[in-house]
Image (cartoon, rainbow, N blue to C red; front, side, top):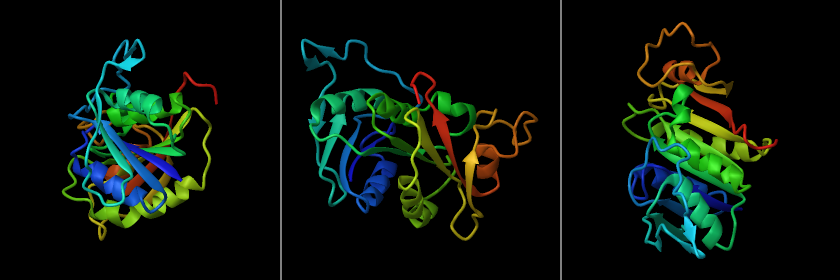
Length: 228
């Protein structure tokens, strides 16, 4: 399996290194990520990204501190730019794109602003399936991710989504001994990050309720512009 790993926190972030290392257990890995922090950019792109066949945003092959990664590229642009430039310049296309691991959950209304989700949505535009991975902002380490992510990836790779949907995986702040398990089919909460946990508009099966209660939240996000 050929896997592209992208993010919005930048190519030097800890989360993308963790994700790349675990992705290597499932196939060949190429990393494509922004040079700098690009959180909150949603699916923002550079207008006129290509002029006369040449990208306006630089893409540069760089060393990557995870042994086994096939190639790594730093892009002077947004997470969406990363996907567009990579699709244009990297000959071997991915079987799937992993986006993350984001520092901060991408749940509820915040998915509208997320560069992590934006990169995964651009993968769909490029006709590549995608999974977004995020870790709750207050988490102090990747212990739970390290314990659970391989099983989650294996389970998700065995499933097939419509072409207009991505998987959205969110890890709570809890340590392995404290977390309660995995909740599937979570729907986006009706509150932003930091809103009162008792928001009356929230629903029991929402992603934020799962995270608040110490569960890993797994659901889907739909790109309404694409035909299923």
